[in-house]
Length: 455
Image (tube, rainbow, N blue to C red; front, top):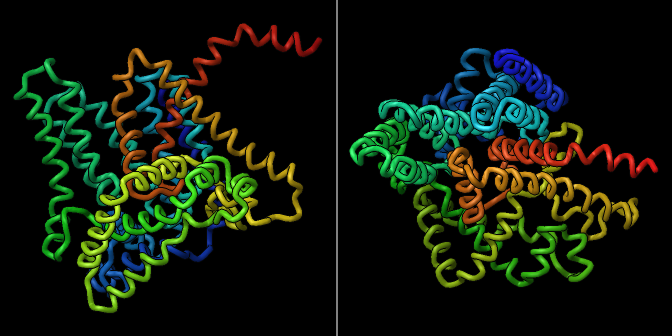
């Protein structure tokens, strides 16, 4: 198949997958965080203010503006958003193939595209009014642009700077990736071109980034905030320290619970709480109390951030332990439940506290370990793919840099499996390398193995 035919095939396949996984969400109302983004978009349209129901908000601006654009064209129509996001997902798959093809070859790139197309946790985000699909599109476009401009003139570095700026104002979690990119620019060009030329490339990237992010950061400063795109980092980090203190009461039990499930952890520690990692009620009460005192979002963020930093400084061992659990949690299996297939459920508490009495112990064990076996196999091929490229890792440099960055960030701050969704297209590139390499090495042994089994 030609490049054009593969792109068309992947686009159609991803679009069909998008409609399949979201078929029951059409014509349905929205809930939870979706209501916030929708409300901000409506305030922008009706009042011309960046607020939620007339009050200040901590949400980043690009996704609400994305909704504003759709509403202006199609009216206040949730299904229009869902259809556009499905198409955006399909375009993302095509960009991923175009990114992977020169790096790992056509067959492996096509495999990575297919795996991304059918990866249900990412696909079904298309039906939700949340940032994940737009953010994934932007980060895949960012990595693609970084590869494309790497051998070009300095002025072209302006483009990935703009894309990173848009991604940052979609999800603030990527804002520090800016420093990783600058550092990697100096790494890849050091002693290959003059220091002056390296600086010009870095400067073009910085200018592109600041043109997008600069005005928003200036606004945050004028409103009393810090150098962050959303004034909620303090609350997030303090919630993490609250969970950290609770989880530190049983290091081993919670590690088993996160890695294999609390169903098994309770076999060893019967009194362990399988949902302790979800409870940040103390932090929520602090935010409510400070709000009642008339504190702004930015003032609250500053106060909570100081409390969180104090805890981390005095309890570094507990915090580092929690980062390990966050890493496991971030890369845990993602399941869907409910009639709409859209509700993501954490896998850790599954079957704990005597849930699902209708199932036998054997069935629970097989299901809980079976799902994890699939996930462990996935990450085995991720690692195996990296190992197969060990002599030429620079070829995958930007991909690996992004994977490492988001894993570090969410491990240090807060993690739920949904936050890892934008990483999975890049995981699948590595999986494709691992799978094809394993096949090439073992395909001649397969007939002999099948023959032995037949005997």
